[in-house]
Amino acid sequence: MKTTKKIMLPENEMPTQWYNIVADMKNKPLPMLNPATKQPLKPEEMEALFAKGAVEQEFSQERYIDIPEEVQTLYKIYRPTPLVRASGLEKALDTPAKIYFKNESVSPVGSHKLNSAIPQAYYNKIQGIKHITTETGAGQWGSALSIACQHFGLDLQVFMVKVSYDQKPYRKSVMNTYGAQVFASPSDQTEIGRRLRRKFPNTSGTLGMAISEAVEVAIKNPDTRYSLGSVLNHVILHQTIIGLEAEKQLEMTGDYPDVVIGCFGGGSNFSGIAFPFLRHNLTEGKTTRFVAAEPASCPKLTRGEFNYDFGDTEGFTPLIPMYTLGHDFEPADIHAGGLRYHGAGSIVSQLIKDNLIEAVDIKQLDSFAAGVLFAKVEGIIPAPESTHAISAAIQEALKAKEEGKEKVILFNLSGHGLIDMASYDKYLSGQLGNYEVPQELIDKNIAKLEKLV
Image (cartoon, rainbow, N blue to C red; front, side, top):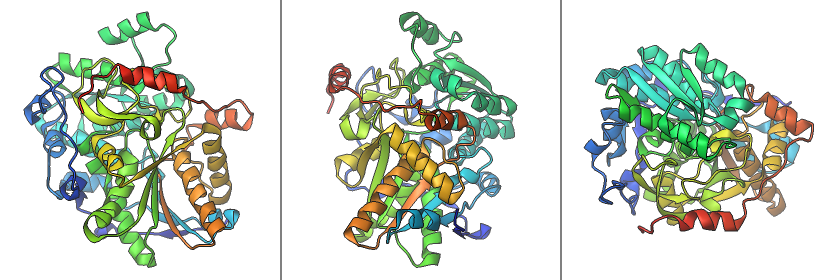
């Protein structure tokens, strides 16, 4: 492991506003639709499900939105996060590229998810809401929302995808320690969960199923609201603090990224690192490339179809314009549980459609190989989700070596993997494999969707 250089931003330079990329998009995302009327969704139609403050941000066209002072105070517990020059990785790859990563693993819960959990809990608190429900894939979002709800005195129920509930028992322990109730989804706590268990007795669960359960609880209880960890515009907005900080930190080095990379499940950490830099492409003619790295076993950006689809399995959510594999798609049981989601957020989907960002798919074994190399040379064991971004960054660095060109690569280390060691044990003992999705399965799922675009 070679000593790396950390670029630290003074606390008093932490951004005080989030960046809303919708303001600078030539082609705005298509509106969400009311599933009953197929008409554009109105803000008031979302207020029974989400906090009013989050709904306002969901529909906002303003370029910059102020971060509330109480949220800023809590951010300062762990923000600004370090930008790190990955000199150990550069040496191992013998590349002329400069590689930087934004280290979001230093938050109290070990991932970027706290960036949205804090403001979402805050907006529910000031509205007088007492109870929150949510879903979680690998557990990072559930952990983040658990500690945020604890701070603001809110009760939290978390529906955790069953495969991750079984694979990552200490994620459940973290959430319980912070005061949350955690149920393996599909569960026996909801009508939908019980129906799914009867219909699919051997299912390992999906994020779509867990979302359906959490939404059902929120809909049935007027004093309860639902909170989401990715996909929607307001979540992506909160995460832009990552890229806004990285932008200031790179200015201190004199470098500017040629390519920005993030792993991709629903879009939160990728958008958070990418959008503040993408705004310079949109407004100043910069030519930075943006690469979303998704798992080959859940390839919504690389093999999905752009259409309106539900954000959950049972069709409780609004219809979202997205690249999707179909809302009832059940991905393979990969260990990057946070990336096992069938669709992409509307903003990212529009940007993909307009060829303003790119996507690559990463096989599970390649992602873990990248994670192990990174751990050896940089000293940080990355979350299985983050290894996808590392793998894509390695590909870019090796391409620079082949071409003999200097290149500045920036990727987001969205979280550490210290509670995912069972996954690494399986990889190191040869028990993991790759999963390929048959095209017929994708075609079958997509064929069920009503063609609305």
